[in-house]
Image (cartoon, rainbow, N blue to C red; front, side, top):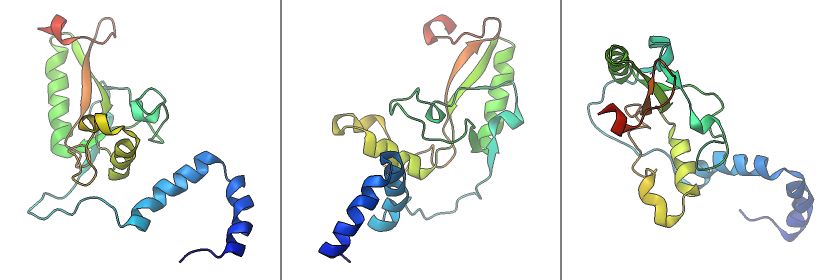
Length: 169
C-alpha cells in the first residue's frame, strides 16, 4: 500500500527526525519480513541444535570477537556482545585442540563462531560485488550460521602474542 501525497508530506519531517543509524537498524530488521527473505530452508535428518558458549567450556580460550567492535571490514559493531558459540560437538572438539596446544606452548584466540543469519545478510549486503566471494551468500547460508565454523588463530602462551603459520611449522 502506497502513502498518499498528503501522508508523504506528513511523514517527511518524521522520517527526517529519525537518526540515520536508527533508520538503518529498522530497515535491516524489517527487510526480511518485507522482502520475504530469511534463512534458507533445509530438509534432512539434522541433529537438534545445541549451541555451547566456548569460554564456558574452557575459559583459557581467548576471545577477540571482531564483529562486536569497529575492528572489522564494516568499521562498525554488528554484535551487541563479544561472545562465541558453537554446536556442542564442535565446541568440545575446540576445547580438546586447545588442551593439546597448551603442551606445545600455544592457545586459541577466537574471532567468531556461530553467526546469526541476519549478520550474514548484513555482511553480504555491505560487500561490493567484486568481493562477494569472500562472504557467505545468505540465500545459501554458511557453516557459521549452523554453528559449526570458527574463525581463530593461535597465540603464544608465554608472550600472549598471535602467531603466524610460518613460525609454527
